[in-house]
Length: 312
Length: 290
Image (tube, rainbow over all chains, first blue to last red; front, top):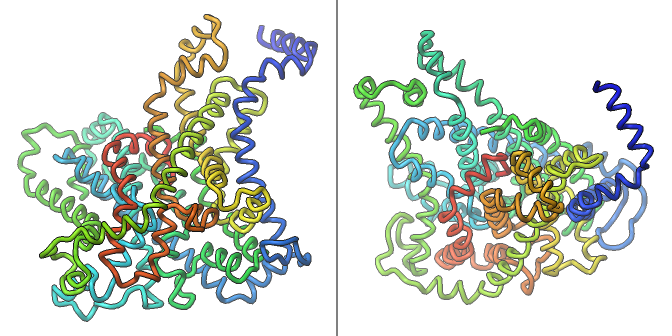
């Protein structure tokens, strides 16, 4: 039945013509139009335009300058130590921003999921920084790292480890990891919430069955729980990698990329190239590289979103 | 951790669980230690805000102020009040517009369906991977030519546009989960497309819409990067951009800085504390951005 019916209906549709199908669907198109216009104008177009201007010399204000082909990219990758340093820093940032929240967030989620009292309190404490603006986070942690009045050095001196106390943000080799701790502090609450929701979604009888089959505690975690958390890992790791590529706020507030160039991230270098040295063509080239890198982590995440495997 | 976590998982009967007391103690100890570590930076900031300039430098960061003062808050409020109001002017319309427009699109894509609706959904949700920084070099010039640079309208449009990806994702998912029978019944009763949205879908999705509003409010209130690029001058800047200006100028006035940052953080913290379960619902129903 279905084959002939569908052929018939297809014929009918062509016979009525495309116009009637458009008018019938008019409300659908109209409702989606504002969103499409907004995204096309303020997301897709500026990105395409960034691809275009990355091939030109441009000061970011007037008309496009000379067409230079791939030489902005060539310059960045082959001749520019600041860019390579920013790229290395961004990868280090991504590694820390992925590892710290994943490990601590998962640990806290497992702890909270063990029928504790005051669960909301513990969850709230870890999740609270997530609601704070990155500028305020930058202030809080600048103060934490303050060598004379900050909590960290104060505690180190108080417990007799004064030798470790230092001006964290003024030290070129420590500034970037120190800032990342602030960002990861915020991020951990998000990871915890995602893992916790995933843990709660694991049916108890599954674990019960494994227990009856003689699985030990460690085996239970390793062979049952962790594999079932795979979608949650994808979400946490995918978004962390993706967000790391465009990270800017905390670094800008705490060190502006300094001391020297030591805490430059891609986005910091992009900002400085565009607005301070007025090489918007180079800035756009950095933006394109950043987009391609973000798409790798983002792809994992978006695939998961669309498959809808993340059902808690 | 391993043993502890498996307690719920193993679903042991109560009698069997009793002998595990020491493990329970370690479990609570771990949670308390992590919670204290996580709250300490905020606590230290709060304490500092109540100390005078002299006391801030003479005492340790964990010591409560001997003579608590509101002077820092007083000064900070006078200084950042105009930008604090700017933040409201930017945040409220941006939040309502991004959820409202996102809901229309989500409804169209998830319930009305049309040629290419799946593809459009992919394109909208997929745009989430584009870092804001990537479009920074071209965006300012573009807004300038449109006469939107350094205007409330400009930043509101940008927040609304960049909110679409996640709002469409969050809401389309939930609208799709409404049973077909409910919607079909309304259609048979002669409801128009918009009528169905307003009379059937919206009332059934109030918690999801509330989650959307609260998430957007917090993200936009806390935004720094977009505002720094688009509304950098004192007349139109939100409080986050004004605060950032403190870094050089008032670097040594730690009490003043702390007080200003607490004032700036207060609205989103209050919303967070009041509506925590909506945040959790919003995040877990789509596992949104961090």
